[in-house]
Image (cartoon, rainbow, N blue to C red; front, side):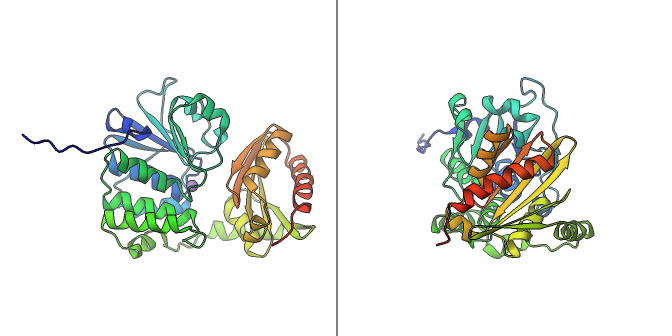
Length: 332
Ligand SMILES: [Mn+2]
């Protein structure tokens, strides 16, 4: 009998071949987060897709493309030792507050991410795999899964390419490596790019979203800081879209505050112009965390923050920090 020997590198996803896996990702899972989760469920046995609090609109659209084949368990029941799951995998997760109350499992679970390295987590968790240079988490999941012998079927391919497209703004900011990975995944899954585009571009009219955007616009104010303009507003829903809209209108930095009880959250987006000048919004929110005791992080152009502070106080503090940071930057 001849057995076929395949060289398989071992990595954090190796554990997914056995046991009962729960995949979790950041609150209000976006397309990259949900794409990674669906892909793991499509490529490995016995995977439960979990979500913390909610699933974003874009990710819900993506889920619909699979005709109900992938169900999401929102806020899954897990006991203090992680049962009934082993292992738990966190994908696309940058900070503990994004996965509360599941953050207590972060140090003892598999974590695959592409945001800024969380050095505290890296110190205690040997199954923490973070590649800040990767344009999407989906590309990391793809590579690790293939390394441990997973087969990329069409569902997994659709989910992962959707993740890459979402995190590269539909390839507008994609490095060649992301395009190459995309082509590889499409070929492996037997898909055309158009199949993925169709799956994630389903325009839905949502009256509550329109109203939230108009409220955000009406409540907005802006500050000219050196060569840049920071615009901000407050709105209780669709914060990311509201922040993106501020940048689409021409602001270099758009920050949206929302209050939930005594917690204030900030959602930030930055223009290409200010990011090229050197602003890193994720680092900006990390600095704000150190100043206020909150919790923040993310990408250069898209990041978030959360603290138990009144909104007025937080807005004053981050504005002062923005003045300090932006005044030192020059547009290229
Ligand atoms: Mn991501």
